[in-house]
Length: 207
Length: 207
DNA sequence: TAGATTGTTAATCGATTAACAATC
DNA sequence: TAGATTGTTAATCGATTAACAATC
Image (tube, rainbow over all chains, first blue to last red; front, side, top):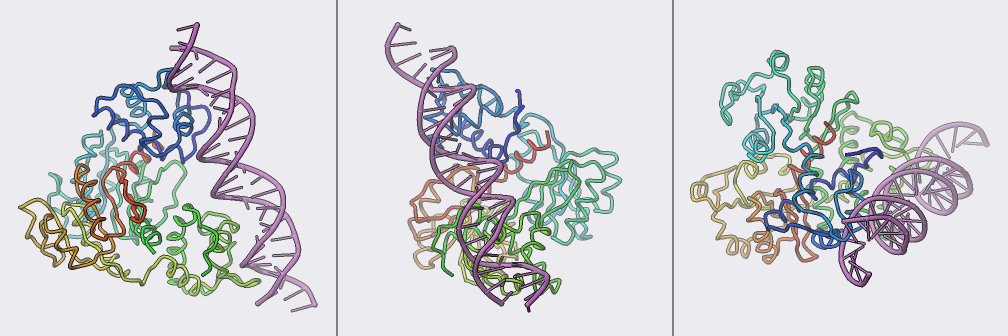
């Protein structure tokens, strides 16, 4: 609730993981859990869990631990789950199609509002009930339909320009799947999924 | 060359990024670069770059900086680029298909050797020239075809069991796309791509 | 040689872990 | 009340940054 002290990126990146483990506990009908017990399951320290959670509020109770459902819901609030976000997918290639068909998003408050591409062979085809639109129509579309997040699954050389374009049209978050770093105005949030980087890290650890 | 002092995960995760920037510099016909200049491009400190690189060897020259091509090739070696890795894809859904069609992998020494699924409607269909095999045939296949990496793009509830199965059959690296943490014997390397975690982090920063 | 820039050691900063008083 | 476990402060550890002698 009181988010005074600025929370480090490391802590933020651990939140979805807490959320997953709590979801599992809920499914297993566990009603309460101590930081110690949770740390054993997650392979961290109880200290870290308590420190992390206390960045956002005191969700536990001395002598008792944490109520699983309550903590789960509190983290959900922090994560903005249940909030509605409208998104578009730019780039209807394999990855774009995979994201469009990823039902997890829909069930979590993400609402697909449009799919775009440049390829005339792809424009007009239907994906997940959406007619793929011409990328040239981005401006028209975004002026009529305010969008929160754009998922960019286009080739690298298109990414930077596209990012600028949609940012100018009020898109506040970019989920970038191309292997390149985006530089944008400070108020646009960029989250990268660098698949090839990830694969390289796997390989390094393999050698 | 001399990798005495153990390199931290943070450093390893930065290597693919150096590699990308050096690749760009090469394309722009830049022959030499100082840590200072590179730090400005990448938005880090020159100190960090020199520290990071010196975990693996002294690739620079006082008064000169770094030869771009040489450094690029040295990092390539560390990353295992140019080495050949055989991989299979387990789960021929949207994500599996996206990975199968991702040509970047092929051009970087990754050789697709098979695709598996459980769905009778998908088994037997052709993806990227590969007939999708029945997951039941994993054991037979892996005994005849030693594989380095398995990409797991199956539903969460299948992931853990599958991971065990292929690990037992000599697969040394797992690229896990399901939103779950895998616990395996120490010698199996796991690299996770938790898309929903990544999207949640985007949303947190958006709120 | 003088200037530039590395490799590397030392200083700082931040994040993780330990400890413990508060309290359920 | 006694036991358990939190919230939080203090100690430790590791990673980042700064500084500088070595050297091209």
